[in-house]
Image (cartoon, rainbow, N blue to C red; front, side, top):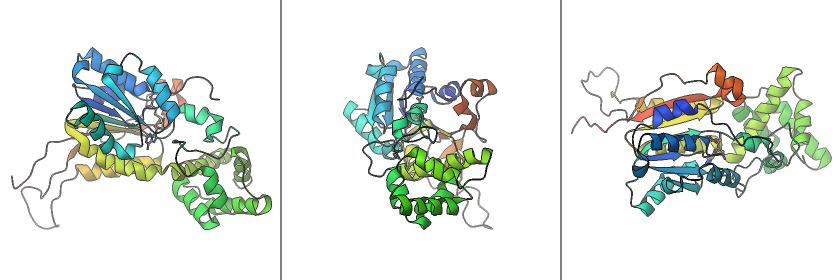
Amino acid sequence: MAQGRFHDPVLAGEIVAFLVRKPGIYVDGTLGGGGHSLAFLHALREGGYSEQSLLIGIDQDDAALEEAARTLRGFEAHSVLVKGNFQDIEAIITGVCRGKGLNPKVAGILLDLGVSSFQIDTAERGFSYLREGPLDMRMDSDAPLSAGDIVNSYEEKELARLIYRYGEEPRSRSIAKAIVDWRQKNGSVSGTKELADIIRGNAHGGEKVIKTLSRVFQALRIEVNGELDVLRRALYDGIDCLDDYGRMAVISYHSLEDRIVKTVFAEKARSDWGPKGVAMREPLAYGTVALVTRKPLMASSQEIASNLRARSAKLRVIEKIPRRDYHE
Ligand SMILES: C[S@@+](CC[C@H](N)C(=O)[O-])C[C@H]1O[C@@H](n2cnc3c(N)ncnc32)[C@H](O)[C@@H]1O
């Protein structure tokens, strides 16, 4: 079992300041232990907004939902917790709002990506190369694909491709070969420790071993949970759900996630000025969001000193702008 605290929310003060500015519907798409949601609910109460506000918390992990329900005890009248994937954010918001007779336009959305400290620290979930556990890595334990399925059934080329693509690991080919060789000799790779030993045997020495282990485990986790595809979809659909001047905040923890967030936000902020060389006074179509943070915001050194997880966090925030049409 996991030891210690469930999860310390990262950049919580900053996120509340960016998002919670008026009464409305707030969506925490990555509820975890409910740390950010609790901060939202406190801020809404302090602003006198509670009665006209609702927090919708989404997580695909049953353990997270149980912990969040404990954390948010006392706020039941102003919160709804939903088991689901944030890729279905639009359907979830519509469903909850329809049930409560509310207009499904939201004032704020948070996505705090990746896994919680609790998930990493729970050996039986199989997320960590530091703990002996099954090759699982599913955030949603009802999902069909586990890390073991990938490690023990993907062809060498497929394994190498995913380790390179989702782990950005230069030794992807030799690691994939070592995994397949192991399978041929021993039948299967049976757990996180066995996999870690195979990776160690094919990594450069020193600090690079840790990097390689992290990268390969990251790659498997991304593949198991389809993390990059669901993120892309949640960004587009989440932006559609925002009310005018509603805001979306996303915290990413590695460059693949941050690249997607940056690209989608920039694309939605860009106006279409038509073909090059044609002088126009107004764009053909306006961007639908404004970038609130031009550069990602990072945690302070004090926060990093008390919560190591914050060191790789990058926060980006956008604001929905009211629809404007040239030909109105
Ligand atoms: C970094 S933790 C969030 C921690 C949370 N902000 C807190 O303060 O405790 C990420 C959480 O999001 C969940 N999660 C990740 N991807 C998800 C997805 N696509 N749909 C739903 N939940 C997801 C994970 O199960 C995990 O509980």
